[in-house]
Length: 228
Image (cartoon, rainbow, N blue to C red; front, side):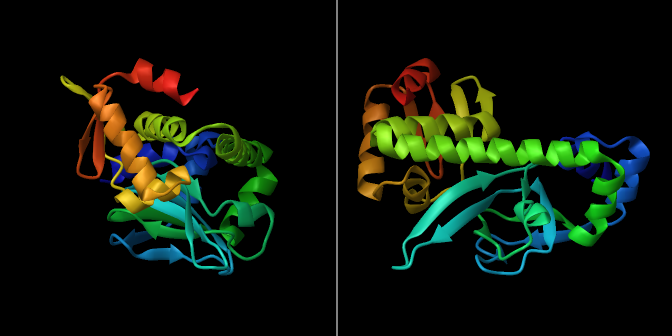
């Protein structure tokens, strides 16, 4: 288990820039956090003083509007980070983090991280690159909401989930996203009925097969064309 944890951590942007001694020293500061499905890691507005690296499972990042509607911003899996924004811009959490499945995370306090950033600027560069990637994704989501219809957004969301969680098999690419129909609709930014209609249409065309909290992608090229 220790070897598996170290392997996952080594792929996280925070650890990529460190040599073995530096990585070992930083790992000694880690606090392991275990969440059951539906448990909240932190809530929007909470004080942010820790960064987390996903070790196993999935966690969703959400924001809630003034009228109570929830928007699903991202679904994160092993090797991905969350809570890093407050490391560079101390302040309240800008989103809530909730476990989609049972999950294990490595938590690192900002007070433990800052000395590494000061002594090894390349660590900060890797973290900033990760933030830039997150910002690019956010910009893409905003553009899609304006310029892309719902079926196109559904196709794009499935391809994004497939890139991170998909597993090849003899009958297609299995994507166990673990999202409810409502969560998938929030992720796409549309009503559940409209998203279900798009999925049913894709299934009718033979592009995918729908399973419980999962899809099997059968024609990825057609989905890519529809996502454009």
